[in-house]
Length: 419
Image (cartoon, rainbow, N blue to C red; front, side, top):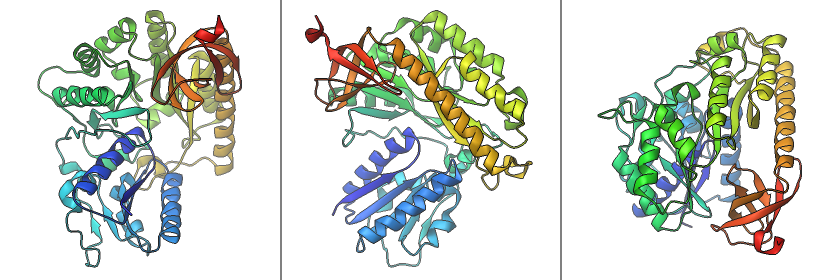
């Protein structure tokens, strides 16, 4: 058995799992499962622990290495698991030297250093992504903000950007490898460039990528903090069709008091202004958002403001998180909302999100769309809507007439057959 990875959490983790796989293979590591964990919620940590136990039952003779954000912030809980052979920090997991000559029989079971001592993010070159039709490109890591609910800065460290030349180089390599769609990813990508010489921004990076790599067909950007969106980003959204019309907002709440208690830097009016501005520049853009249900001190009225902004901002895709108190964060010490109410509110937000997605899918019927085929019979439109399709090979971009819609996807027929 060679090295395999189990990945939890964000797109950045998905990218890093490919880096890990490559570095471990080059170091000659064999018969190992590397679990790349997420720390964003207590549930994410629970799922990782559950997966580790299952991996041990199904692979009794294989070494299990645990890494990722949960391993960085809570290494002791994994080190205490009898199924785990080694715990690695977020910086150590990306270094090829870590996997050279590992002594699993030694006394050192935890290699987790101070993540805040890391000052640079290397532009790891990933030649391909196993089983995927789109690839992720890391442009940034870490976060300098201290939202009261978030443990991630303690797992990722300070914000640091990959130099523009390294990003463009990786984009070029992936396009040459045949990837039609790339996703720029990081922890706080709208902070991109603040630590680099000059006045580089996310928008300038996107403009440069699309200028220098004309062969790139589709480019996406992952979750953004709208209050940090720069003028160059808005300009490229308006002018460049290769940048996909789908933006995901780090919204978290629709109530201003909750946002202040979260130590977010925007208010609800800022979000509404941003989506209106973007739609004026490019009407077909759709928006997704992260929303936390049941943040400490959230009243019924505050929650209803979150429900309201889903409609007022016209959000199509919702990622709903029931609030999860993370030890060591200020929000964990605030007055908590009853867990039953938290779950009820999360369920109501998911229902609202599902209704919005269903309504949007219905508007696509009869339109022409281009879709990236992800696997036989299934693809994604430029607005990231799942589409059932009747032809095309994985990785191919096909043109369709949308013929039907269900609650969360559409169906399409090849243009050549639709005449």
